[in-house]
Length: 152
Image 1 (cartoon, one colour):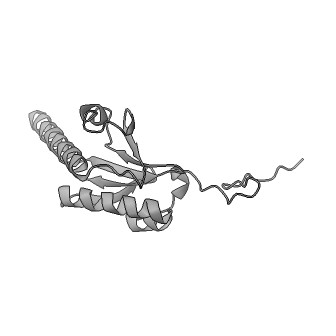
Image 2: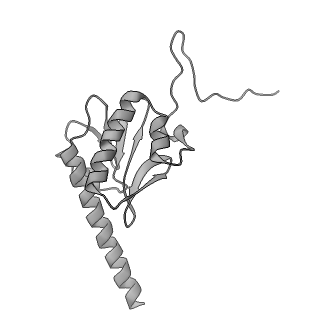
Image 3: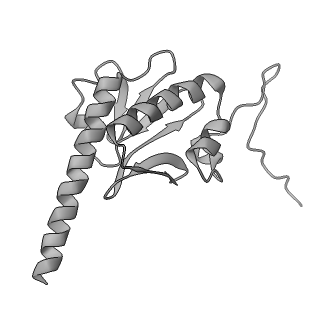
């Protein structure tokens, strides 16, 4: 018996199709392409977040990794994404969210993710601090790796 392929969108009675999860935005090769595929309110929120990150990390390279927009400078600095019900910030490690937990109080958090909505965006000053902390951490890691390589 032949089975039908499962659609990435499902429809409930009288409701529009559900948007695919963040990983389903795969295929975007640039942050602009990624943003063009999401809802307008999320696009505006993530574009504002992108500008805060760009200002805090002017030398960082914009990339797509793990299917989400991210910034690289001596390694991954930070990423962001859109999901069906929220947007998220990903500091690309397992401790930065905890390091800034007090300043992020009121937002949903897990080990490597801070979730927010377009109507309640993350404070720009906190995002800038997180980005600068990640850049400093990556620079220290790169310096340490170079020193170890020099000893070999």
